[in-house]
Image (cartoon, rainbow, N blue to C red; front, top):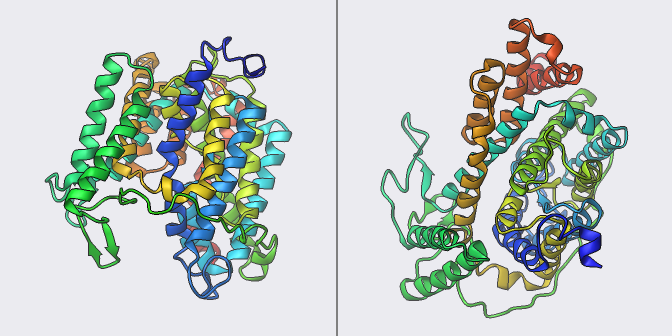
Length: 477
C-alpha cells in the first residue's frame, strides 16, 4: 500500500531510504522549534505585550505550537503533495513579523495579516496563477535558483556553526570564526561532523548524513561534559565566542514534557486596519506575499532538481497540490500565532539521504509531533552537529551549474545575480527577484522580448514595487 500510494519504487527509492531521509530532514530543521520562540517570543508588540498576551515571555508554549503546526503541515504535504518537502515557521518572515509588523500593532493583529496573506496565496493557487508563474520561468533560471539556494544553505550551515561570523566592524562583513580565527570546541565538532559525513559519502555508506549527525551529537555531549563550554549567547551584552550556537548538548534530565497549545486561534483578521492606515497594511501584506510566494517557488524547484523529479521544462509532479499545501501553511501559521509557515530548503538534506516521495515528509511530520512531547530530547542536538549536513547538500545542489548556458547573457547574467544574491543578502526572494528583473531587461535590450513569457513582465513589475517598498512608504507617509 505504501509503495503504491507514494510511488516509492517508481521513483527509485525504498521505504528505508524514505524513513532515513525524513529523519535527517527533521534533524536539520528541528532548530526552528527552539529558535522561533527566541525570535517572536522575546519581542513586545505595540501594546508592550509578549506573544500570547502576557507580560512575560512564554517560550515553551510557542515551541510546542511551532512543532505542532510544522508536524501537521509536513504530514499534509506528504499525503497530499507526495513530495519530500517539510514545512515550518519561516525564518526571515518571523523576524519581519516581530520587528516590522508587531511593533505597529498587537500580536493578534499581526497574525491576522499573515492569515490574510495566506488566504490570498491560496486563491492564487486555486485560480492557477501561482502555477502559471512557476511554469513561466525559463528552465535554466530555475537551475540557477536551485544552485543559488545551495550556496545559501551552505552559508547558513557555516554561519550557524560559527565557522563564518559577522565581523561587527570594518569593511569586511563576514570572516573566519572569531575575528579571523577558529575558536572553541563547537567548531571542532562541526569539522568532525563535516569530514565524517564526507568520508561516509565517499564510501557510499547508506545513511551518511544521519550517522554523521548522530555521532557528532554524541561527541558534542562528551565535549560539553568534559569542558563545560556553555552557550554562545549569554545576554544581549555578553557573548561567549567559544560557546554552542543554540542548544547546549547534554544528556537530558527529562525526556517528556506536557505541551501547551494555548496560542491556537489568537489572531484578529482585520484588527490591523484599525491600528495603521489601510495602505500601510496592504503594503505589509504585499511584502509578506511576495516573499512567501517566491521563497516557495525557489525551494520547490531546488528540491525537484536535487531529487531528479523535475522534467525537461523544470516542472514537477503534483505541482498544484504542493503549492496548495504550502499556501495553507501561511494561513495555519497565522491562525496558530507562530508566524507564517513555509517550505524548508533543509528538506534537501533528506533528499541527499535518498528521499524521493511524500513518505519522507510523513516521517518528518511525525517527528515534529513527537517533539511537542519530547522537546528536552531534541534540545540535545546542537547546531554544530546538524549543520554539516547543510554544507554537504549545498555541494550537491551546486553540481547543477553545468547545465546553464553561460554564452547567453540573457540567461547567464540573471543566473549569476540569482546565485550570488541569495547568500549575500540572506534572502531567496531577493535573488529570484534580481534574476527575473535582469532577465526581462536584458531580453528587451537584445530585442528578444517575445521570448519572455507575459507573466514575467507582471512579476518583474511586482518585484520592482517590492524592492522600492521603503521609498514608496516614505512617499505615502
